Structure formats: structure tokens, C-alpha cells
Image (cartoon, rainbow, N blue to C red; front, side):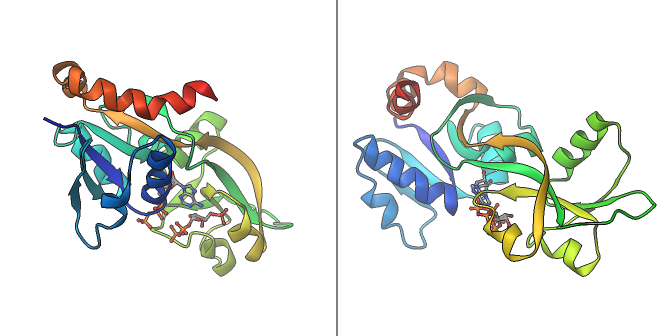
Length: 206
Ligand SMILES: Nc1ncnc2c1ncn2[C@@H]1O[C@H](COP(=O)(O)OP(=O)(O)OP(=O)(O)O)[C@@H](O)[C@H]1O
Ligand SMILES: O=P(O)(O)OC[C@H]1O[C@H](OP(=O)(O)OP(=O)(O)O)[C@H](O)[C@@H]1O
């Protein structure tokens, strides 16, 4: 039996493959998957899903482990073991607005894909705001007058800069992380342990 891993498609997937190579594991079968959504290698069975669905597959025990951005864990709070960070996928969640923004004399409107993180952040600040849910290109919202500010991921800062926006407040820093199904970690410990130690070593050596 091999570990079953749910891997977030896209940015995380690309960086995970490079990381496997660094750890001495051949990632060719994963890189050559084409449109296949599941691949078996010598070490594990992988399937590829959106981050939020990685949470769900791990929570339900379909995958033993998941590789997912901490932002997705923070937003959706899955019932899993949040095992350890990986040395890639670094980004932060921040509040941003147009440069020189003049705030209106009413409740602020904040647009975000991450409504739970946004709600929690303003709750802790003791500020009452209206939150508007968007699914992407969140930087458009202040430019088009839908919102006064946004809560979104910032990595290089290029998207903000090129759209005349700036960070006002940092909320939280994130990396990709390894999560585990609660019962898999106990029941399949012997299978998961060697795989996890390959993934974790780099972090403990940093
Ligand atoms: N610049 C960035 N933008 C978005 N996510 C980033 C960035 N840098 C690192 N990440 C991490 O990568 C994860 C996945 O990003 P990816 O771009 O693949 O998906 P997405 O754009 O959030 O989702 P979608 O599949 O809806 O496009 C995020 O959850 C986050 O943890
Ligand atoms: O600081 P940067 O390096 O510019 O990266 C941040 C941008 O990248 C992400 O968007 P993505 O490309 O995932 O598109 P989306 O807005 O449609 O989710 C994020 O939502 C920001 O817009």
C-alpha cells in the first residue's frame, strides 16, 4: 500500500514537483501527467484538485495527506491534522487600497475571495465592515468602485503596483503545508512516516 496524496493544482503543484526533485524523488511521472487527474509513482498515489477540495478529500480520508496553501486552511478550517510547513508557496494576506485613498464617511466595503479571514480580521480589530465576495481579479474592485479596499494574497506585489494599489495592513504570512487525515495518521503510520520524513527534512534543516 502507498500513501494517497491530494495535491493542489497550479502554483503549489509546480513548486511541489521541484521540491520533490530537490529531495531526490523523480517527479517525471507527475510532470508528464497531461490531463490525467491521478498518477501513481514509486512512492505514492497522487491526485490533483483545487485547494479547497484538497481539504475535503483529506478530511474525508480519501487522501491520507494533502499539500495545500495555508491560506486555504485558514479560510476553510478543515478538520485535519495541520502537520508542517513546506519551504515554498510563500505569500501573505493583506489589506490593500488605491494609493492615497480617501475613506468615505460610511461603513467600509471590503472585497475578497477570503471572506472568513476578512470577517475574522475585522472582528478582532473591532471594526464593522461590509464584505463583498469575489472569485478572482479582486484588485478590480476598488478600481471600479465596488469596494473601498480588498483583502487578498500578495506575493511579489506586482499586481497591486501595476493597478495603482498599495498594502495598508499585513494580516498573516503563509506557505504551502502538509495536512493529514486524522485516522490515516494513526492507522497508516508505517506507510506515511517514511514519505513524511522525506518531505519534512528540508524544513528542519533550514
Ligand atoms: N501570488 C500568489 N497568488 C495566489 N496564490 C499564491 C500566490 N503565491 C503563493 N500562492 C499560494 O498558492 C496557492 C494556490 O494558488 P493558485 O494560483 O494555484 O490557485 P488560485 O489562483 O488561488 O485558485 P484558482 O484555481 O481559483 O485560480 C494559494 O492558495 C496560495 O497558498
Ligand atoms: O503579488 P503578486 O505576485 O502580483 O501576486 C498576487 C496576485 O496573484 C493572485 O492572483 P491569481 O493570479 O491567482 O489570479 P486571481 O486573482 O484570478 O485569483 C492574487 O489573488 C493576486 O492577485
